[in-house]
Image 1 (cartoon, one colour):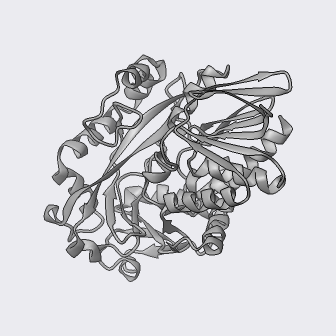
Image 2 (tube, rainbow, N blue to C red):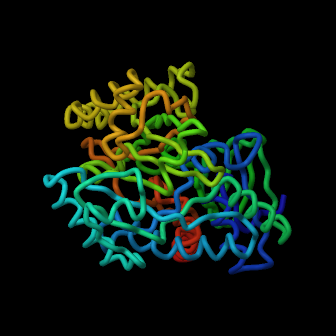
Length: 398
């Protein structure tokens, strides 16, 4: 078999965006995308709140700050060019009390350092101008934050690259990627596939593939299940755009928020609990291997000791919907438990190192002719077109 020029592992938005970028740089290249599921965008790309982040939260100078800012505008332009619906609905980050103002100040500083357009500080009296039913002592308004269906973006990318000659094969699980001289062998459930270069965007399984390919076992992917509730149709008027809390700066999660979606729903959440499976979209799903791997990782226990209070709060929210709704009603006081019904769930692939630290920035592993994406949580979907350029640069330099 003649080797492929590039094999991209993963049919989520990042793998597809990377295949597209590599093809744009080398239009005659033979490019293959492999996806383990029967369809593309089956996991994180298709199970998220659909927020196009503006770049407020991320430490200036970090990859997240740089690539989110670049990726946001590239994504809006891509949606315009390919007819994917989106809305620049804006976001409010609300401080509930004086104790949260220093953290809100820091977010404002980061947002301005990162070049977030139109960022504006609001007083308590100005909050209802944006969200009539919301309350707080102060807020940041980000008009450039938006919403989209990232699975629809992925489908548009798949159609585009297939029209340009890329082959996408679903139902093919990749076991390892190994170098043999000038040729790289991608070992799959359908046999070995030779290629000149390979990119692994394996999401929830990125650590396993990297380790099977000879990369370090550190960091490990620890799956967190994020459960959402949603507003009943008659209560959707309570939220006009996106309402977020001031997040805990020690965690890479943004806290419980109220999110308008491109479909017209309003989601509340998510919770953040250790998942019993890397695909536990249903609470009934349990995978012994997945949970065993999580529990055997030293970083899991060190993380748990550090954040046990947060874990108890999340379990309380998951067990008692009234407590969950009460947390949301702190921002929208007229919200009642009777306004809420069960919603969807997603799994976040969070990299945790051996010391128990939760990796907050994007992370990559590189070998000759191979790039492994080791940590790409939110805002990876927003940043996907910019991350694809970085991967292509690193692949060229490897």
